[in-house]
Image (cartoon, rainbow, N blue to C red; front, side, top):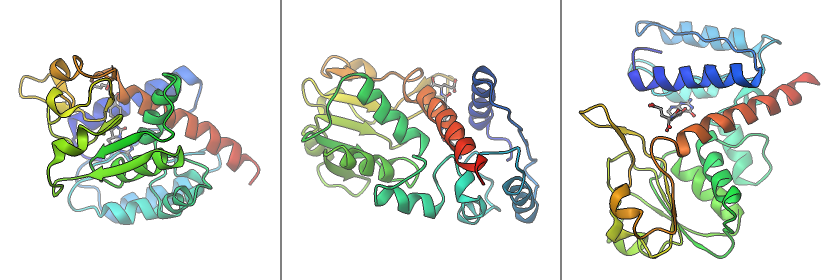
Length: 245
Ligand code: L34
């Protein structure tokens, strides 16, 4: 909804991924002026449309729309973002259908790189509902020892320097410097920041961090594409779950 230029790129990438996977998709590019009632009406239509297995409202939504109301309106069995409180609760107790795409993508990168989370010091910088909080929970499920840091954390560098696995999800360009990282640590950069020169950069200062880290993800080409891959996975799962209904 609206004119967010980054959202336009991400949604286009999602459409393209659907095509590549052979997933049927519908895109509704709603104008900024659309009312909350109209958006809720569309969600209700899609909730009841049997040809649709998964629904996603790309965030951020314009200021006159209440994000929580929108997330709550999506049928939990079609909530391929796993943002609905029912799905958030299921993740908390470890009995879930969908994982949120970005944290799940981070876990997949860790797993595919042969990194064992068990017993590791994991530090998540950022506590958003869509990344930081669920990321911490997924690392905990893999028996990591998890610390969540945020804007009020005292002596952040001491915390990040203790991390075997460091996940940066703060949304501040180049916030984590090489000097804040432990030698050999796994550094995962969730941030996608657009600089004034239009260049993309992460929350980690890559040039200094790559010299210290044992493994590190780039921006672009790191977590972003994994977010989309996990959306495809959730959508296939939703199709299977909803087929029997
Ligand atoms: N509802 N809103 C909802 N679900 C989501 O899972 C998202 N997110 C975040 C923003 N809002 C959302 C995304 O889709 C972030 N995000 C996302 C998706 C794709 C990419 C980045 C973020 C991506 O494709 N990144 C590319 C670069 C793209 C570019 O050129 O800007 C990369 O290589 O990182």
